[in-house]
Length: 620
Image (cartoon, rainbow, N blue to C red; front, side, top):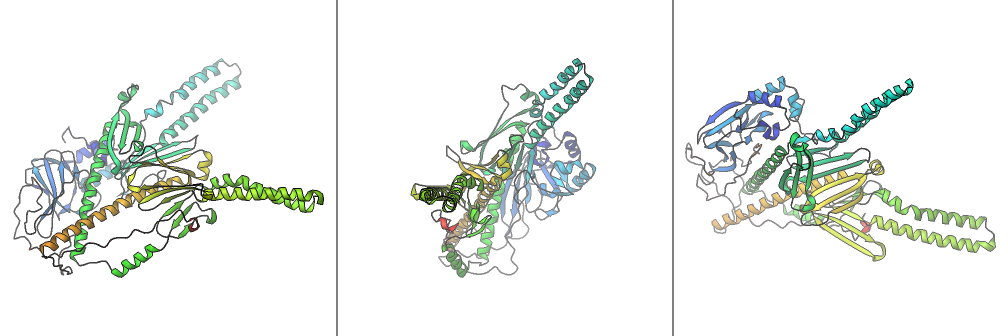
C-alpha cells in the first residue's frame, strides 16, 4: 500500500484504531491497470471495494440500446463498491480506466475473515450481529430509513482532563489535612472524604464529557450538548444541502491545541445564524475532510437519484401510463374541503393537533395555559364561594353589598380567564409540507401577527430544553435559522421540542424529494415536447411492447465521487452518451434499433391542498 494514501481518510474507516487499520491494510490487494482497461464490468458479480490510488477512471452505464451514460469520475483517493463488502450484489455499471494507474481491492472474503479475527471491527465500523446496521444513539432523535452514520464522536479527551485537575489536587490536600489532625476518627473520615469527593467530581466531569457528541450522517450534521446539573439538552442539526463552507482552526490562545491535535470546526451555511461551531474536535483536519467528502457524496447521490427518477418517468411515459382523470378529480375535490382536526392528544387542552390535510398544529405547553389561567380560575372559585356564603350566612342588610362584590369579581375572573385561554389557544405553530406558519393573536382584534416561512429556506434547526421543570414536563424551545434572516424564528415553550425538530427535518427531506420528482416531470415534459415536434405534432400513444427491457436502474454504491452527467443527444448515435476521456471499446454486433417514442403533453397542474387557516380557531 502506498504511503501517501491513508485508509482513515475514507468515511468507512474513520473511527478505526491504528491496529485495526494495519490489519485492513494487510488484507488489501494491489492491482494495476492501463488506459482503456475495464476494472469491473456491468452485470458481473461485485466482489468487494475498490480504492483508486492513482490514475483516473470513469463509471458509466450501458443501456438497452447500447448507449453509454456517464455516472461519475473517480479520482485518486476515492472508493467504490463499499456495499459489496457486506452483501452479495452485481455491478450496476462499468468502471473503465481513463488514465493508467493503480488501485487497492478489499474483497468480501478477506473482509469477512477480518471480522472473524478482529471482533472489535464490527462495532468500530457500525456493524452488529454480523450485519451492517445504522442505528443512531437513543439520545438523538429517530434516524431516517435511508440515513447512514459516517462518524459519531465526542470532544477531545483533553476537554475532560483539563477540568479534572482540581479534583485530583483535592486528594493530596485532604490527605495533608488528615495527617495534621490528631483525632484518629476524624483523620479516617477525612481520608475517606478525600476519595469520595474527588471521585464523584471525576465521574460527573466524565459524564458531562461523554454526554456531548457530534454525529455526521450521509444527510445531516448533528450536535448534542447536555448539562446534567442544569438539566439542559440542546440538539442542533444542519442538513448537508445547507452546508456551504467548512473551516477549522487551532485556538491561538490554547498551547495544548497543537500538541494534542484538537481544534474548532466551523460549519458555515447560507445564513450567518445557522453556522455550527464544533469546539475541541479531535483531528480537525480529518473531520473537515470527512464533511467535505460527505457533502460531495451527497451531491453525487442526489444527481444519481434525479437521473433515476427521470428514467423512471420516461419509462412510465413510454409504457403509456397516464394519470386517471377520475382520481385526479376526486383528489381535487378533496383538496377543496377545509382541513379538519383528526387527532389531538388531550382534547380541549391539546397542544398537538393533526389536520386532515397533513398539517400539524402546535400550541404552547399545557403548563403555559395553567400558569396564565391559575389566577383567573382562583378568582372565579373565590367569587362563587363568596356568593354562596353571602346567600346563606350574611345578614340581609349586607347581602346586597357582598353579592354585588361577588358578582363583579366573578365577571372579572371570567373575562380574565377568557382572555388568557383565548390567548393560549390562538398562539399557533403550524407545520405543513411547504411552509411553517407562526400565528400570534390577541382577543378583540388587538393583535394578529402571521409569519410564514418556506421550509426550504431553513438552514439550521435546534431544540433546547432547559431546567428541571422543563425536563420533567418535557417542554422547551425550537429555534430555526433562516437563509438571509438576521434573527431566528422560535417555537416558544412547546411540548416535546425534539419531536418537533425531527418533524421539521422530515418535512425538509420530503420537500427535497418532491422537488426532485417535479424537476424530473419537467424534464420529461421537455423531452416529450421535443419528440412531439420531431414527429410533426403527432402524439403517439402505445404501451411498452412485451419483452422490452426495463430502463429502471439500480443505485450505484459510491463512497466518494463527483457526478459527470451525460447529456441526451440524437437518437441512433451509439456514442451519444459516451463519457468524456473514456477510450472507445468495440461493441459486438450492431446497436439496437431505437424504438419509437411517443410525445407527451403538458402535465396537468397539481393543486396544492388547502392549508390550515389560523383565522378559523373553531377548527381546532
